[in-house]
Each structure stands twice: as structure tokens, then as C-alpha cells.
Figure (cartoon, rainbow, N blue to C red):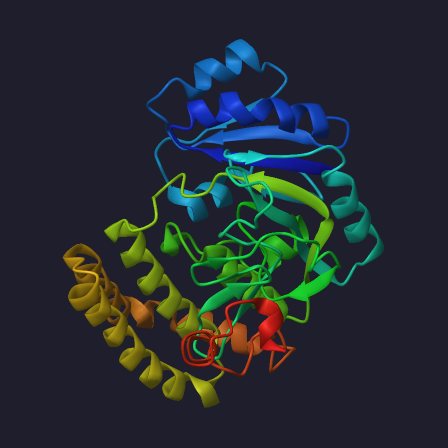
Length: 338
């Protein structure tokens, strides 16, 4: 099986210089290493030519964002497995072998991820995926090792392979056949929630998503848009609602969306009144408005997902509200949810 590690880069010269050496050192015997460049304006491409000539490169003509950037890049790369790897990830010795071996042995698995730890606090999980992701009834993502802003220390408590609903886009190994059969990442999302949407579609097709903590990597996080950025807030709300519209079965759609409307307005008011963050308040409103303006552009997607749905319900989409569990019942850790 041929594996291609593909780093989608946009003005990431510093991160490439810092982390690409470990990717090459610990991966080149098992995979081709690619950098696909989203029309960077820094010295990224000169750095690659000067310091990393063994890395294969391709240049996109403009910044297509995470989703379409990857779709355009992967369409030009022949491989059985793609590894979508952020430029701000430090890989470790033997990181790739367990992932490839598991996929080779389990043909019902479409995608997997390693354990994601923090580059700045290496004994802690990292926000963007930790040890594998889930959704609650209303579309809120959480992970083994991270619920909302509570990030756990890694004490080996989740050091076992587990089926999850979504794998982190920071380090995602996916079968190329599954990737394209499911339609790839949704380019309309631009950035944020797109890997959750892809994995949810794959799960509904009856394919498995797995976290394999035997493999672990370190992630800086927040490299594209820092936490608290109004654009990030806007994209998260718009794309999360769109993902729900695409993927929810007919019998759940209207009920979930009614509750989400209430919860989103409460979140917006909290940002305005308690946090005094007018930028994020406006971003939530803009995100909801943008969703309603374009949601019917996804009607064909809903129909195709319904047509190919083999698994309903998806067990990794939990029936409870994570907001209620976290704020009302004080269940801050994944292990509290059982």
C-alpha cells in the first residue's frame, strides 16, 4: 500500500522549518512526503527547495482554504492512503507504522488518527482532536481528553484503540478510495468542521473511524486562526449548522435545529453580556444568517447522504446534550460521561 503524507501550507515557513525535519526523519521509509502550497506569500517554497529537496511539492494558484486546497492537492497525488498533516505537528518515532498496519488489517476502517498531544504542554492532550472525537445530540464536538475548554492531562487513561465519530484534521490518515467515494472534504466550508463532516458521512456509509493511541504526535494548534478570532467563530457556527443540515436524518432535523437556535442565541448573549466580546457576538449572528442563506445549496448533499446511509443511528453521535452534562452535571472529563 502506498502512503502519501500531504502537508497543506499557507505562509507556514516557520512551522515547516521547525517540524518538517521530524516528518522526513520518521516517515520517509514508509511514505512520500508532500507539501501542497496554497499560494503562500512568504518564503515557504524557497525554504523547501533550499533545505528539504527530498520533499515533493505542488503549488496551487491561490489560497483555496483547508477543504478545497486538500481536494485539489490530493486529486494530483496517487496513493492508497493519504495522511492529512498540519504543518505545526511534530511527529514521533514509529508514529506512522501502527496507523498503516491497522488500516491494512481492518478493511472496514476508512480513517484513523494518532493520539494528539500538545506541543507546548506535552503531558496534556491537544484541543483539536485529543484521543478521538464524538458529537452530542445537537452537534457539539468533544473528545476523549477534551470537552469544551477542559483539556485533560494524558495519564494513559485513553491508551486503547477506540471507534470514534471523527478524527482530527491535524493528523488524519484516510483511504483514498473512501475519501473520494464520500466526496472528499466539502470545499464550501473553506475551513473548520470539514473533517467532522467528512468522517460523519463515512460513518453513515457504514465505514469505521478509529483512534490509535499507540501512535502519538504533538500539535501546536491555532495556527490558521487563533482561538477567539471572530472569523473562526463565524466559520464554526456556520459550518457546524451546515454539517447538521447535511447529515441529520429527516426525523431529527427540525427538532435539533429548533434547540440549536435557542442554544446559539444563548451563546451569543453570553459573549456579549458576560464576556463583553462584541466581535464574537456578531460572528455568531452572521454565522447563523449565512447558514440560512445557503442551506438549500446542500439539499442534493442531504439526498445523497440519505441514499447511501447504511448506519442509523451512528453510535458515536451520543444521544445526550454535552452542554447539560458539562455545565449542569459538572462532567468535565470524558470518563465522567459513562
